[in-house]
Image (tube, rainbow, N blue to C red; front, side, top):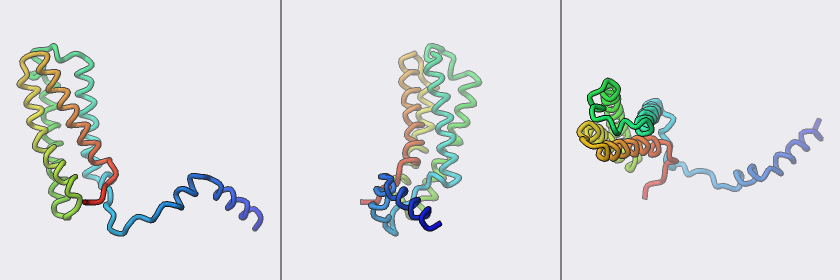
Length: 158
């Protein structure tokens, strides 16, 4: 039995990934912790990803050419969901502010919460296909940024 254990240990130690992981220093006790797994932030990522998919679908489907797009039921429902997402972003900002942690993410979430209604309003106000395309692309970028800033590995403060 001990020979089998010794063989298993020697095989594990020959895996270069294990050796690389063992060579890394342990994380500092005060290293920043990712919030991506927390329910509120996971919800923000989920909703942002879903809305980003909707916007990309609109871009791909050519709604840019539809002058009455912003008055339709699909956009009206989208606008309501975007307002809810902006409120969640602001809630995330306030939670991080109360914790006194992660200054960058805290500020970015506040900025996204403030920008989201403006980007949605720009889509609604667009009067030409070129304006609609630009407004939808900027909204798509903001939604993507909302996902990426939360899921990015946390960085130590400088």
